[in-house]
Structure formats: structure tokens, C-alpha cells
Length: 115
Image (cartoon, rainbow, N blue to C red; front, side, top):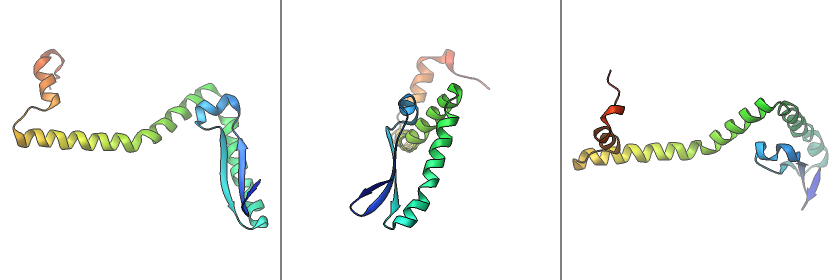
């Protein structure tokens, strides 16, 4: 437990071999201003991180965790990109232009799937 400016924090280094998978070097969580309350709250993040460390001992689980972490981090940008693509396609239709997909389909008809 760490004390900074009268507030208590949970702080723990991420094991070196898991830092790339987890994406951080140190866990840190606020625990509050009251010592007794902070001490009680200390068990939860500690237990969660110990469980995560034991789960990530398996290489396949570690890779799955990295993939899920990356996807959750990229998800907002993916949604923004998809919305921008839809807006661009709509603009193309309004302006009477071909969308990127239509240009591709015309240039490479052998890749167009026919139902």
C-alpha cells in the first residue's frame, strides 16, 4: 500500500515476463482516504492480480489475453472508422460517385462473390 498526499493506493509491479501481455509495468488503484477502509480494499486488487498472473502462466491464455486487451483498446477507433466509412459511402451515393468497394469490384471482377 502506498500513501500519497493523504490518500492510499494499491501499487504492485507487473512481472517482467507479463508486462508485454498486460500492457503496463505497474498496477495502481486508489483505495481512499481512510486507512482501515483502504486496508480492507487492498485485498481485492491483490487477489485479482494474483489470479491473473497464475492464469497467464499458460502461453495460450497469455496470447488470448493480449488479443482481447488489444481488441478492447482498439474497439472505439474501429467504430469511428466504420462510421466514417459509412458516411463516405453515403457521400459518394449523394454525389453520384463510386464507392471504394465499387471501384475495387470493377477493377477486380474475379474477386467479386456472386450469390
